[in-house]
Image (cartoon, rainbow, N blue to C red; front, side, top):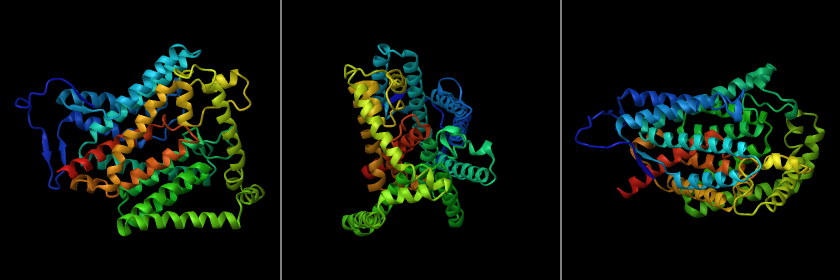
Length: 437
């Protein structure tokens, strides 16, 4: 969808475009520079979620709002046409949430959830339009990569030095290092996404520095003790290996990589059954193993029980409107269910809370993301964007990993996920236009 802010008389507008020697264009206007700087600051401070404010707001939301406001000023000052590629699916989800929220028992929670939806959509739209030039795109991905490595180093230093303020330990989570995320799964998802962004942007440029960055971020991921995060990372790496094999050997090479990986995992589990691995981890006395692999059986059991409770809860609704956004945990608690918690599954959460219309919106959102992401695997980018994002398949791997995580953790409210949505929409459009040209 394209939105025009104000009239666009081409003959009366001054030419503010400066084209550099490498073919990249960047506007000289101060409004654009301010908006890009605010956006990059929001990328850098993504992990700063605590201390939290009312309605689950976080310090980084100030930067999100700043980038939205400055982006709107830039769009208005230059009479730009704005792209909103995710407008229709988000509109369906918000409309479904508003309808179910009006008749729900918790309208206040529904209103807060809808406000978050609109904030994330607005931020994603700003990203789509501000990162439309290769140079701005490069700035954003480099900032994300370096910031992720820096925050991972801070986490590792805090863990080695037993600095509680940096570890972010909480009694309910044991020794899981949360930093300022406040949630181990949120932290793990950010570290996984950052690894693939580093790969996609090839930042830092020096190979030894990039490898060191991988090690730091992977260690931060391990300290979160998230089994799902490690599994998602493995699936993303397997995807990249299969893409590389496809480009060298075609479909046969890609299938061979997947088959070898499947056989290796099957052989490993045959020699070392999963139940035995879990028991060995529990008896190891190592907190990292006890609270990750050792608790995997309990986590699987709890997730299965939660799925049953969600279906029971859904049966209490009319099936069309749902029970209202963000109502799952309060309703499970009020109903005295054995395991009252958040849905931990975006599909089930949307169906339970926003009904079939909301689920349709979610499916359209996923389809739209796939539509923009697919060209990044099959088609080359233009020269400018190819220099800005040398390995765009890494971004597709990040989305694939987050999609896997969404089956056992709600990721739709993760801010950096919507940043990935926006980045992929820009690059996918460029790949399509280059193919047509």
